[in-house]
Image (cartoon, rainbow, N blue to C red; front, side, top):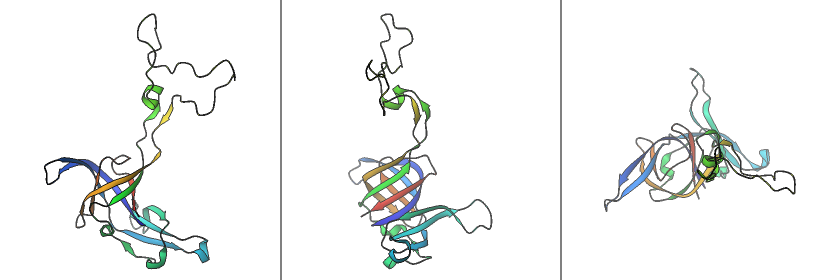
Amino acid sequence: MKYMLAQKIQMSQIFDEAGNVIPVTILRAKPVIVTQVKTKERDRYEAVQVGLGEKKKKGSSSFRWLREFPISPADLKLGDKIELTIFKEGEPVQIRGVSKGKGFQGVVKRHGFHGGPRTHGQKHSEREPGSIGATWPQRVLKGKKMAGRMGGERVTIKNSQIVKIEPDKNLLYVKGAVPGARGSLIQVGSE
């Protein structure tokens, strides 16, 4: 298993040899530093904790982000750097991030409901959810799709493809969209 932390920069497009347009998301993947190695003897499981980014406070040696990955720590020790070069172009990767928060949204935007009819005596039912239950069981069932907070959830995209790697600039070009706002933390993993 290979893991890396990156920061989302922006979406763009590049052209392949045939002249086809490929939509890509540009990620800045600076080297991550191993901050803790967890072993079965001491912690009852094997993992590696890595850190990325600087704190805003001057003189602080701590990292902005700390994440733990289930990697066998046999070849890693405290203070090691994990570089972007562990990945290859064309390699399928799994991407995790937190989606953009949309706030409190209605059922049309949140769940894709069609709403009620616009005419024939209907006045205020254009974007309403309609009925939320029957006379029996005389309650609203759990999990009923309703208005509420939308976004801000952890999203995983599997089998995304690395299109291009620029190790000198610490840039990783991934095919398609990546969850999250610009500047958000993205986890890139591969088997």
